Length: 404
Length: 138
Image 1 (cartoon, chains in turn brown, red):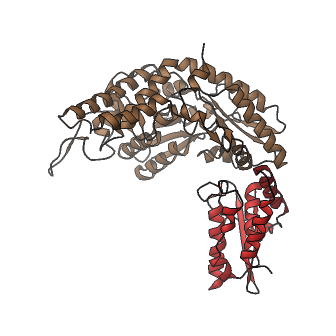
Image 2 (spheres, helix red, strand yellow; image 1 turned 120 degrees about the vertical axis):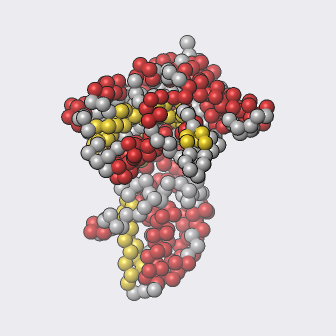
Image 3 (tube, chains in turn brown, yellow; image 1 turned 90 degrees about the horizontal axis):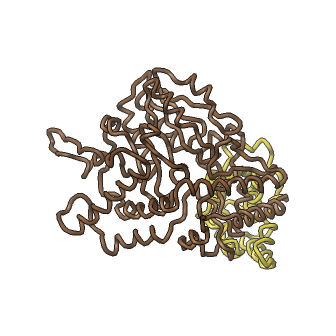
């Protein structure tokens, strides 16, 4: 039995007031709050362990390196990857996608095609536009249906032997749709295309197993899964990563540097130039431990209960329209109220201590499709409660009253 | 015609009457609703102010040595914010507008809501209004 109060007690920020009210935090899709164990791990690194990794022969450097690599091992197990060196540390999902898209600039040529979907976050659109601009490849877009599902019939029409890479999100950050990535990966591989999955909104909500999923690349961010900011993961299959040109040059990523030519380090260091966010990486392990101690399945089940509840409660408000009504959804509810601007609603409920997101959620193509300026988004995490949903619904009702 | 400073003082007095944020917000909403409509032909892409989460259009006309601003927004709170700025600056001389110190914002108890770092577009609105003033001043 989940004891949510016990879980909440681990998050010190949940005790604070905002505008004189208890904080109700429903902007978890943007970033989650951090448990004390993550905060302590980060502080402990600087207090007792600070040293640069992979370089020194001295005690502290060895200790920092061991702990840094321990996180890599923990991530490998968490996502069911085969090898530690398939886990690359980056600054975040955006950085991971840019790393791959940058490499594809030299792998692609005119006549090749890259496919993204209409419901992608800008960070899974713009790097591919830049990649196509330089390489001469063409960018194709999978449209979505009115309920927020990908149009899989159109997807199949886009797939040809020219398709070299498909980049889609596991879960849409704006609508919450869980995409059928297993089917996409299987069909992509049949035409010889690689697949990159943007898992930013999935990694702390859906159990992952890379070996079963068979994605070529999978990207996610620590800060959306109770970990520190500016730490991200790029998972890539060994052979795919070996084939990908390095991203940034510098220390750590080389085997031998000479003005006659430089050779690059082996995986994963080939993609980890410069001193990384060591404190963040080490603290990320505490975040993964927090998740695995609860169990991703347990988290998913609880969050789904909350999602069903908030969906049914919000629909009781007259004039509400939900964007994203796919059958498979994860922890995100996007909506508008007829005649009201999402920004106005957000401004007013903020005064009642409620943190929700308003705007286009960095997914302007979806907003364009629905012909709206943005939505109000409630995104859930394990520490949220039905009582908080009630407070939020009441605040929204109050906002509606003030604005009408 | 009152000076910019006098109008700011009146606004500060108005807001001092309110007990809580709800009344202040309701006042902003009313100001937004009462804002004289902008001529539809000025609601163009060029007149959109960047940096707002909502769409805010601002138009300026220079007549008899004064600038008349008109504006609109699809969000009522943004409309209220731009309405306050219009109340303060519209009808004043370009040189007055360009050098105006808008200290009422810190004194009406909506500092957090109208803070320059928030995504409310306030800074962009003021900047655009002052840019018009500089342009008409030359």
